[in-house]
Amino acid sequence: MKTINSRIAHLIAIEGLNNNSFAKRIGVSSTTISYLVGERQSRPGFDVIEKIAVAFPDINMDWLIRGTGPERKQAGKAPDTFWSLMQNERSRYGTLMGLHGSLSGDFDVVLGELKTASN
Image (cartoon, rainbow, N blue to C red; front, side):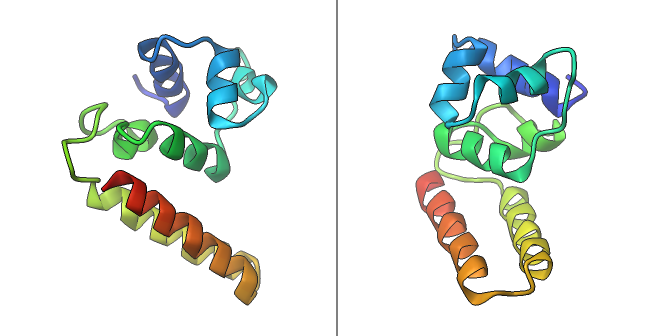
């Protein structure tokens, strides 16, 4: 699977879901999923990837994002590269938002929750 879009479609299939049920499970519209895995093949935003990470904590985010490693996480360990990607996104996010304290703080809370959920 070469693209993140094909990996998302594969995730939907291996979880026994359809586009609508997958969209509900991660908290996005079914149109968003159709744009990702349908003919359009839009690139998912950070918010969609984050929602997938929360809804499917056993999925290896390195596999989903880059296509490297196994589909599922190894028991008890989140890949370090995923957390480094998240920290990089936090840096970009903070820069884009002008380092507003409340906005970058929200990202830290979400990042902490993701890390806690994976342990």
